[in-house]
Length: 319
Length: 319
Image 1 (cartoon, rainbow over the protein chains, first blue to last red):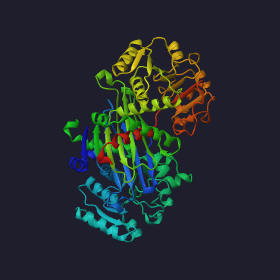
Image 2 (cartoon, one colour):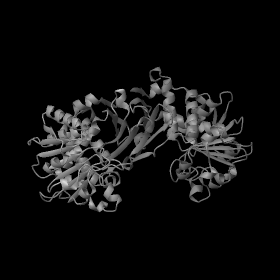
Image 3 (cartoon, rainbow over the protein chains, first blue to last red):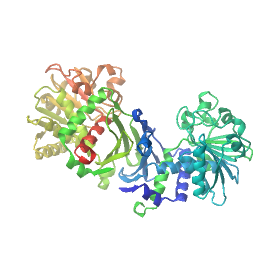
Image 4 (cartoon, chains in turn cyan, red):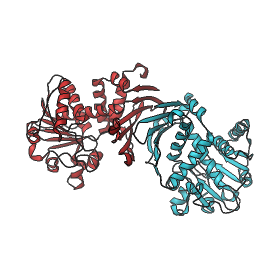
């Protein structure tokens, strides 16, 4: 069994390969070619901890993947990161373990960054440049970096807003240090109106982005809502958008951004398009430069499979 | 993260420690102290393969366990074992991975052997000696060896019957070579009548053991039925037994030996006793030497937790 630690995984990582793999995984999922058992959940409420096990297999692949991800939110007080995780790759032909990727959650962060970037790129107006990030966590950084890497010929202008202005400033500084064009903003309504595309990546439980702030032609990728009771966008904004896209309709309607409208009976699976169908061009996506589009991403095991396989692709021993 | 391969695990293994841990795990499960998410299943029908992920946490334990078990039934044609697997131990305090036990399924075999032995020992008549094994697979061997180890002061007499007489002979030879008193038999009805305790460990889909063959005082541990449509005992035998015990009522009634009676409405959860309640003496178990008792074991993640922790207990680095 090949074993790689986080540094080795980062060293082997190739962005283009990963993007191609994640894109293909979304398409495979939309086409019903991914076997995805229900997510396993273990809770450790006494220490504010949880563990999720996601697993899946893309039809025809020689390997399948089991991802173990933990979040223990008291860890930082002990000087430890709250997130940890690994991806285990097994042969779909013999069941033998092939590789253990001890990425400590890094691959999940990256596949989430790539997923958001792919959705934004596919749905925002052609040639978009003004990009607003709502949120100041790790994904604020990953979304920006993945999106800029996806459009290397165009210099994007990033604005960052957070409920904590200092944290927004820190994100802007980090992105600037990484060579991106970034500045923080303290005026969310104005920033929303100015943006051509927005990513919302907060754990908000009440909406942060109001319908009135979003002008024609704007695209929003919402990745913060990943469990019941989380919501980043005003329900009326979602209700009146021209195109609603998600990675998994089942998840988005149950515990993603679209849950509120679904629970009130205003939204069904028939109203949403699967991202894989946009990426494969089975669905035409945005029709013109005045539509408001929203993508709600809750994360797929297919992404974990893709990013794991992409990592291993560069290892000749694995091929 | 500590990593141990199969040989290292076997070297560290201590039977008494494992028995104590598995017994405590059954008790904890019966008392509702084990968090056990649903089992994850992935199927690979083209190569007759499957993967099960079991996970769980015993309240108060410092660690939790995720077990990955694969069965790829075309492997032997390629000279590979059909089963494989590993147990991953993570901190229940920080989520950090603590140990990877690459036991290749050996710990599952042993915990299953110990589970059956504990059930038989707890429910068979006091001082039983004549033990019949119905089945010729790996568990035929493990059940015998674990049971004999559990009663070191008594020399058990093992009979082995299988649908393939040559295989039964091979089991008897293996057990004899291991120092046990064992012989094969080709007459199942007579062997059943002579036995004080029986273990049924076959993948039979029609019952092998008839009601008329089982005399007063006999105990039967059934471990073969582990999915819908498997059954080793005649339904009327189960229906008329004096005491029905199982590791998990939910599993036993859904896909274990008790499923047939449950599906026909003749058996409910109220009719079965949980093994942990027998082992803790919360339930009195067998009342006299003429009762017929049956234990149906389908396997618990709690056993995987127990056997993993017992393995690590001998490692000073882990304590």
